[in-house]
Length: 289
Picture 1 (cartoon, one colour):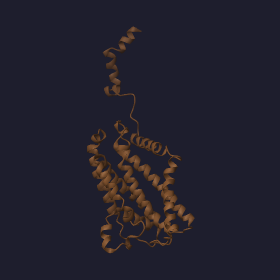
Picture 2 (cartoon, one colour):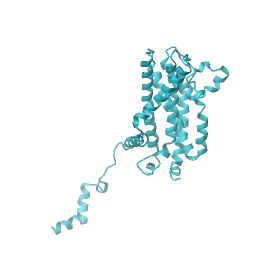
Picture 3 (spheres, helix red, strand yellow):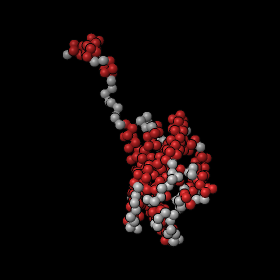
Picture 4 (tube, helix red, strand yellow):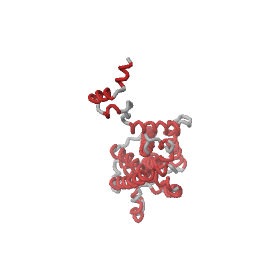
């Protein structure tokens, strides 16, 4: 027995084993890296946000869906019933007209806000080597997009049921509006993720700059009703285009010729590229501040 043990520790044994197995195989660790590591990290981050953000409220994640639905319902009730504003710029139903403007706006702004706060929200977890800053951005974007899409479906179905509407829907235009609104929010949000992290003044300035968007994004009127001398300047607002796409999807006679998908994609890609370049260069210094 002692001779056998000594043989196992002898160079001869090692040489004989080397004939069957290479050095890399002998030194290869037992544990293997997990497949789909990034996707599992993103799912874990999504579940974490659902727990920490919505788990503290009564109703949990359900409240995140019912809150904007209730807010929109109360606003429509005040405008359409209390103030008796019932003649929209398109069609005859004010709740549908307002929802087609409000939902793309809400999707874009909430996406910008969620993505811009990704580093600060997940900062404790980003110190782990398995978690990248892009995982935090994607997780917040995906969760917000799913939430806002569910809100949109509930609102549109509810309006059609309550007012017994029979609209001719252009589904590709509706989907394109949701997707492009989220894409614009992602691009601007990634850039703001860097800018918010390095300048608290820009964060305050951004809040001031976005307040007029509720009135400057054609929520209560259509782009064609804007005086011609202001249309050229208003056209550069990306929200005008996503709102126009949404209304093209619900109003068969509304073509919205001013909508430019190329412009929306360009704005999103430019902002996202700049944001990723800066984050890739400075995210470690931001996390160590």
